Amino acid sequence: MLSKKALHIDLQPFTNDTRVIKECQSLINKLGMEIHVMALHKEGLLQEEIMTGINVRRFKFKSLIRTLPLKFLDCYMQMVAYGKKVSPDIVHAHDVEALPIAIAVAKHANIPLVYDAHEYETERTGLRKGSLKHRVYSFIEKRYIYRANAVITVSNSIAEEYVKLYGIAKPTLLFNCPAKLGTINNKSSQYRQLFDIPEDHMIFVYEGSFGPGRGIRLLLEAFARINNPKVDLIIMGLGLLEEEIVKYANAHANIHFKSLVPQDETIAWISGADIGLSIIEPVSLSYEMSLPNKFFEYCFAGLPVLASNGIEMGPVIDEYLIGWKIDEITVDGIIKAIEKCVIEKERINDFRNNLPRFIDDFNWEKQEEKLILMYDRLLNNRQQ
Image (cartoon, rainbow, N blue to C red; front, side):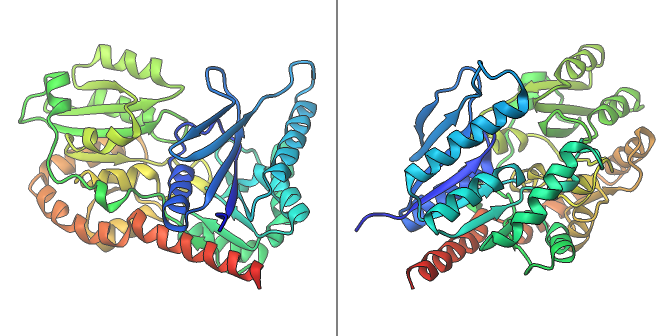
């Protein structure tokens, strides 16, 4: 019997999108599906390759086409043609930009469509209300979300917004959390060895993208100004603010920069810290409603969190008693929160003892079950 095919459309280079990779691997491992991913090409990457059993095809913009809208239109047409050629049994659109391509493929093949909103798509950071891009995204989502046979998103508050906005059934929640098997039980010493940090210093870690709205500049200034030589900040990852982070690290003995490590090593590295930092500035509704990847990764590394008192993170911290909240997202507010963590240092072990309950409720194995049930239902309904 031939295996079922799923076509995933991810308009990124598809190199480290852990959410999409985990979903694809779950479908391969649990349903024996043949997975194809259409992505965008980036210099230095192969146009075609097989990654951990996933068939990846990256599409280039044609250099002879001069205007950006026409480049996108041509690329979309290439993807639609390729998607039809794959002849999938189900098509899975990651983010709003992929919806028109998925709709065209699904309509041609008369197959189910899954819309996977990785955030509050029309309220993203940097997407200015009323701008052409915002109007286009809003139009696409409003027009096509009703064509989806299933909708997925990443937090309860975003799911509820979609229900209110479009009157659809509540989307399935797939939290982007690590596998329970990846939980770290022993602390690493890599940070302390690499940066020569004494054992009596408290290490705070930020891990992730160095993008806007993630509190990085606030953290740098807070740790530069804090009047305590025994608190250290480690910022680990990749992004636009790297040069600025390196400058602070060179100027302040308690601030350290660590370049991005392979995804499968991330949790082991951050386990060497004492507290994980998850700060979201109120720059967009999507950010305010998020439950970031790093929040889960800290917990799976055995770290209590110091996080924004946001719509999602605040209630989770309160329910599971796994860390501290920052009510005022300013340099002074962060300094006060850090000082509170130092004063209440003895609570770290109590918070750590509460992490297993959180991990039992939020792990990829549980998210995978929901994904597999959804695919089973959609594929079985198509056969009937």
